[in-house]
Length: 411
Image (cartoon, rainbow, N blue to C red; front, side):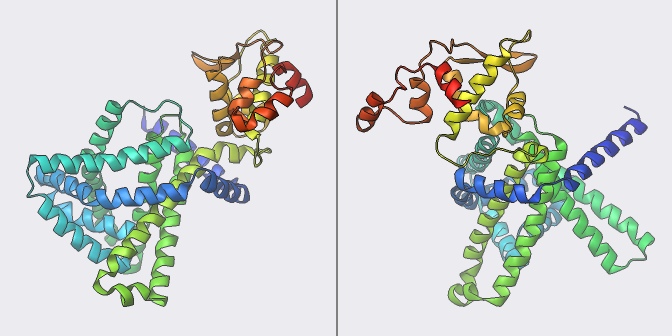
């Protein structure tokens, strides 16, 4: 690819990103974040990740130190990378204390033998695999990558990530030093440039997380919007937390020198809430930009969607090209494709619908709706058949009602 083609591709990417930002539906996004935070239990997930991060923080730090020790050419940037990570991801109120504690713990961990090192590595990988599982849940991924593939990928991230970060910071330092001759060595300008580069590095790292971790196709422009959302949220959260701690010094008064620990726990929890909300924004951005008109907020929504999917596939079966892609079904029903994941999965388990992967993923109807009873679908998505509900099932017509009759009454 020539330089002009690369510049053209970059211009196209920036134009798409700018168009997505300009047309961003803020009100609908806020509603979606609220809905997904409650239904996906992101608060509980953030608490779990906070615990896992606390346990894995020292192992991750130790692995990074080991990588730098193995490559002497980056040893001079080790302190710079450590300081940058803490300054960019931790509020200033506790940044120095956290860096000091991590350095002390990591130096002690470095004295452990092979058995201890393996435990540290497993602990560090546990955090990364937890992140992988939750992000795939947010994207409603049905088949995650194999465990071996995930471990190999994240092992590469653990080893190469610190080196790439060191290289980026070295280029940044060189650019800032060169710019001093152009901007007249104005401290304010240099500080603004460093803050902007730090912001972009955080946004780019989070965008890469959203782009490559879910085992599904995620557009770079959508991932970058999520990265910008997270980077902005982190800056706001740091400012709010610093303001609160300065206004109400409760932690310092009650805990004294130990105040760093509860403040750090609160901050890690806020960080994960912001990262998970950014993942929701990225995953739902296609439907947010297209203006989805229907959202389920009542009981039986998945049951209704399953019936509507069957109706659409029945109509598509009368066309020359059988089957519909999930995005096309979502467009016709005016819903988010992610909302169709559960009802479609149930239909596949019932063998009423089949998924074809012939070049482009399509869904085709396999059941005869005129003779197929509605009861199996209702049991899974509406009301389970148990001793307490047997009287209802006996009195209802769903036991013998064909799916075609239900579709006729639905329309």
